Length: 536
Image (cartoon, rainbow, N blue to C red; front, side, top):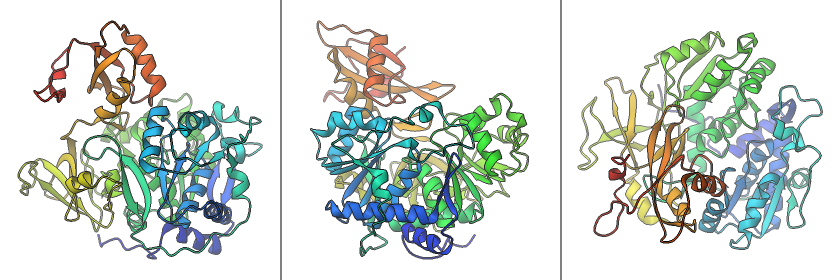
């Protein structure tokens, strides 16, 4: 395949402007039956850019997005980038400690937050640099008569619209009709900061440029045969890099239409494919399984679906599973989607639809170089032999925000040293086999031990904590914590697990707790997590 060349070398928000001019009435998004046209999305993002400028937000300044999937997410995303500011997504699963960490690291002055998440924002506001909060109401753009099933919690938000005195109404801003200021941008300016723990440690902001986003959008579209007349289904979280690429970037790059869902619901997804004649869907393997297990699944007409790249989070998407899915979606080709990471804007490989090789993660996208190096000597490994996956392409990030040492370790002479293990076969297919470091993968979410441990030790009864991942048939891995209690303090397993779920994202919270007298450690006090795996 020839190297991917974007149709026009310009930021994706300029593609949005062009589509708004050439096909203004075409839906960019469909939200439970409510169509958001390219013209409306362009106007809303222009108006938000104008309001940010009025607030003194400058080019290169972080602006935080803190919400679930909704059309307003896309409006805010492109509005921020039209101003040259930096989109900084925060997981809507974040609790107080997690949000505070990211806000403090960014020194963010502005956040766009969903109404149900304002309580978390308010808990950290006094200890942050926040000056302005825009509030988004998920139910604002719901139609009076939805076409498909709407999650009960989303329907319940109707009629509960409130804009606190300390906040500004995002919808009013988006409908103001204001024009975005003209800003001089370079394709290499930072456009997105997605937080990742990289190869180790606490989360760091991976700085990604307009060029990174355009290159990976073009690759995802061209390598998967996506066209402007396709109808996409966008369910994966937009705040996650893969969900953003497939739900925001590719949609606008191709000028297609995305059916956007607030969250995954098996029946809602089945109905959406049937009702809107969805042709292209990026899914996570457990979604396909849940839909096949849904009551009455065989009664839905999924014949419009022709392409379904799938990511194996939690469940491996195998050839038998793809064959089973084809009994429901009879015209659909489904396969492992790709290998990727935040530091490379994801989508580093693709699976040739006419040459699927099960058990692999496909071939490098055109323009992406992949090497397999010995993890200690950096020597090139022969075909078929394991080593560290190292990448170089126009999708490679600019480094970590305010973390030059971490950047130097990961980004060397333009190559990203991933810390992941894998091998290339003779035909160039990549197989990812594991992680050198101690990252834990829970239902597809990356969790690093330090993230969980730093919160567990905030409990009044916890003196020390260390966590590891243990296998789980449903989630891939779950977290087991080893805890040393403070003298004279008592807490049992159930109470600590409940506290953890209240103070961190649910997928990070330990499912098991073991109380120990001491943690295995080196003479300098570094915990030896590998020894914890030997404990019952």
